[in-house]
Amino acid sequence: MSSELRNFLSLSYEELEELNLKAKEQRKNRVPLHKIQEERLKYLTDEKDIKAVTVLFSDLEGRLHMLDYDKKFLVKSWDNLTFDGSSIRGFTAQRESDLRLGIDWSAFYWAPADFFGPGKVLVFGDVIDKGGDPYAADIRGILKTYAEGLNKKQGYTLNAANEIEGFLFKGVDAERRFHETGKFEYVNTGGYYHSLPGDPLRMFIDTAAEVQRSMGFQNEKDHPEVAPSQFEINYGYGEVVAAADQIQIYKLICREVATKLGMSVSFLPKPVVGVNGSGMHTNVSISKNGKNLFWDPKGEEKLSKLGWEFVDRILTHGNDICLLLNSSVNAYRRLDPHFEAPNQIKASATDRGSMIRIPIGNEKSMRVEVRSVAPDANPYMVMYSIFKTGIDGDTSKIKNLRQAERYLPDNIYTALENFNKAPWTTELFGKDVKARYADLKQASADRCPRLLGTFVKSQEVQYHHEVYNQYLWNIF
Image (cartoon, rainbow, N blue to C red; front, side):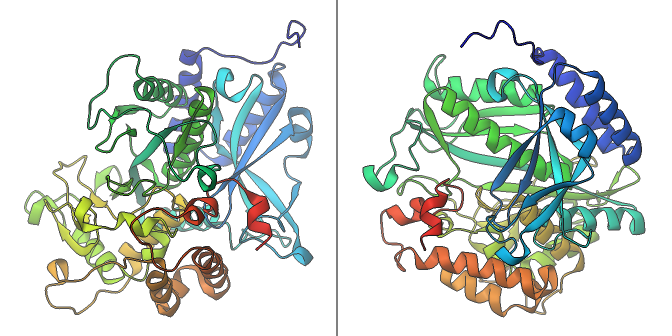
């Protein structure tokens, strides 16, 4: 079909980066929301070449959902956007299907037209219930409320950066067809840091990095990972809600780029047995008035007393929150000590088998690295459970807590049991949302063989919450 008569917005990557970095700076500096709202609405009204606004939100398991609103409609009705929540996993029952979407104008992105289509912009939404309150199962909203509350009461800014690993496989439907093929096909077997110009993995990494850069990610480094066809594309830290949003966009970018190249990206924690799995190492710190509160040049490993207290609380609740950080059946294949797995509930500056590592840092970069996070976890749930636990959790009287012989579960059933019986997880999410989440995870577990065994079962992939096959989910 001819596109000669169409004239939708299509910006250069340099223009996109400039716009996205400006928006990112506004968000970082906490420019009042009414000012940003006014600016964005004026932009949408004046920019005639925008046809639609894509509003993004995530379900209870972290699966990203998107609605496209006609630009002219959204400008007039942005404060009254309703949608049916009954088909969203973990959201409302059919009798309570109507939910609203509020626009988080600070979380606004311009995306490259060659991957997202011309004439579109992206913005994250807040899910709101019938009464006008933040919806209890919208974990992004819970995280946002918690982070804003800490900033107002104590002046804290919660910071995070994630190292998200994934695999690139042949074919555009590699995950959806796994139950037919029984295998994933590598596109590259070069190994850690190794690739040649023009090979498929390098092409994918380069292209995804370009798209990320244009969307204001402020890239740091990218490279093939240890396992064949595995990759990691690193970018700068951000305020906690923005950092979680970036995880969702990172995964969306990777999937879009891979599909365009005729391949599939997988964020399954362990899609192939016998090689290293994929993690999402989560680096966190707390700052106040621009000062990193985790830094102490005289502290053990240069980590402050506040930082060590944060670590101790996470170690105390390590088994309680394991299901939140490792949310799929497949995730427990990754927690295997033979492959540098972070399955020991301890803290160390050097041991990569520890749940928590204390990386080398300075007054700007000092941080705590939670290594036991899988890349398929709900990023908002990950951030909220880590920060809320590290700040408000209990501290166990276990002797030598930081080096005690304690281990994370090696299967989802044990993780579910720990999650269900823990008072702390009720305090995190309340009884209702906790029960909804547990029900979803129990259903996932029950669809798969109880014993993991030595090869990946088709059900682990076929019924995985990130493998987009809603028809299958609904017949169970």
